[in-house]
Image 1 (spheres, one colour):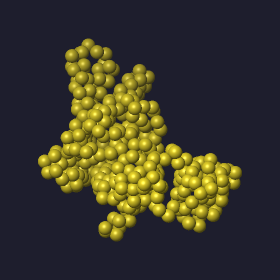
Image 2 (image 1 turned 60 degrees about the horizontal axis):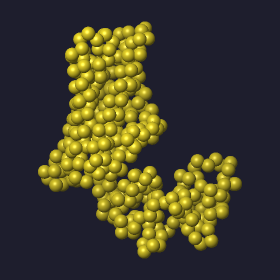
Image 3 (image 1 turned 180 degrees about the vertical axis):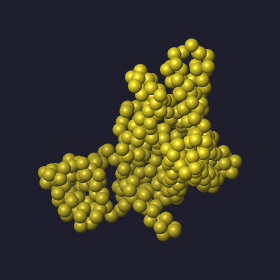
Image 4 (image 1 turned 45 degrees about the vertical axis):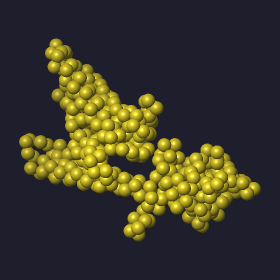
Length: 369
């Protein structure tokens, strides 16, 4: 997810914040202090409540992540954004039981936090009104988060629980994913329709903004379901191919001592290639992807040599030619790299770039093969 910045690591998992998070933070804060605009104290209560709620969201995602990691599902990062949070997995669950445990962990955590807030609110009637309001809102938001996430539509937690349940009883991962996705798309369309009704008919006194927000959530859920299913299809498709079938074998070679200006003018522009092998006196030294050139100012292209920005061969991971392509993609995700060399009998025979895998799958999909 683009537009993020790092907040640090929790249990070895990178925590990121998306800029859209500030939108929902501001909306929640305004909603909490609406009756007390002029009170700095209530602004403090509202902001504190929002911060505690988003700490609850982190706890929700950490529950997913830690249970997933305990069941063999590596978690790379957690990102907070406008709709809550999302944990980035480097590979899917290998069994329905693993996915069921991981999917249920988040809502269970939110329900537990909401329940504790309820007990604090219920058994402490003498709390000051601002504190009682904060505890009540934390209870409401956490229980709402647990309930919303358990809607049985992929890729929500409830949709993953549905897929895991179907997968467990049918043994068919692909069909289970399709059913859960269709339910997820149906949930999205239902939210969109409900939002439109609220905007134009104003039932139960609900505002047009509420309707617009519900429709927006529906649009997000519908697109998330479709995109998640497409990614699941791609990942399953990669299982059918080996590194030797998806690698690039005719990768152009550039000398290590040429300047970036020469590479751009003599290699990239004429050929359109985005990845190059780097050699020095016939010996492979590393690779030069287009992404390594972009950060260098054009003013320095004439004095910067390839060897200064290339990815050295000792920093690259190597895949066996018979390794399946999905496993290679998962290794790229886990190590946060975009390229891997392919070797056979101790000799480098090609290179795989993440972009090439996507292009490979899209081309086959367009050809219908």
